[in-house]
Length: 254
Image (cartoon, rainbow, N blue to C red; front, side, top):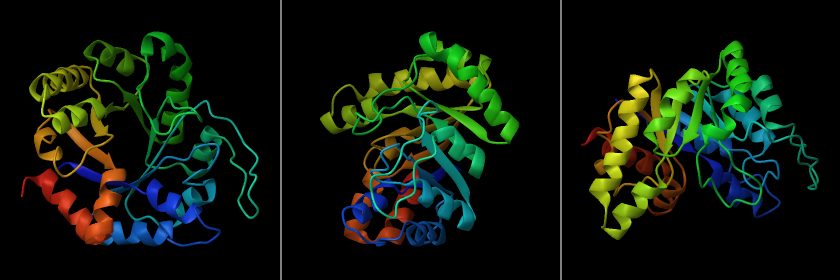
């Protein structure tokens, strides 16, 4: 069974468009869990433009499923410029405080609208190794956000990662265009096989949706997908519980 972790960033983004507490991030997490989601994902950023540090704290206090916090491990503290919004403590300080089930490390910056590339371990392995060691000491499963590059999987394992999360935008774009799908999938397949050979668990995420999931779900060793944007868009049409159930069905092939 492939686990579905629902990313709630877009729920927080809607809330932050007004000075309000609705829609509630914890309430939507509860809806997802009741509908069968196996986990909840959030990706806080220092500018707190969607998920805030306090959202992470609220979720950690109520979740009955796996909590996955994504972010840049080198992002430091930031003072909030919004009244009533707590300061951002820095990504690793938030992880130390909350100790989620999984921490997905992502090389993103404030200027990025969304995550748009994985780690290049040829340049970042030495810097990431102590971070991964600390996560292990905290009892937090680690995952590295990675492009589909088979040659980097052994390095990810060697520096202490537990899993990798494959950045799937290129596959989603190939499916959308209707061109190069087979070749693109084969690249992900080769990367997954290299990850398995290195002893890594495999997650995936970014632009996966109800149309492309059936073409991706048979990837060797796939354990978990994290889906937010597309699922939230579908939830606007069919409701959050129905959307979660539809994604679970797409993963199960039913």
